[in-house]
Length: 70
Image (tube, rainbow, N blue to C red):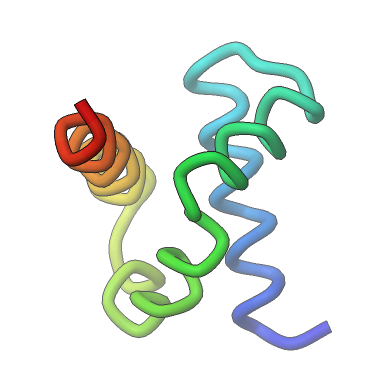
């Protein structure tokens, strides 16, 4: 498994814990908001930051997606 895939799984796990979701719900969120591509596209920036920054960035991205489609 490459480092980007491991990081994507890590992001899913920390998001799951923060939001108190189960695995299916996390997959749904990551699919609905295209977070798989987002995390992989911005891997170089995200992977050097801590948990708080990563979660904040993911939550901001989701908020932007919601505003764009509202």
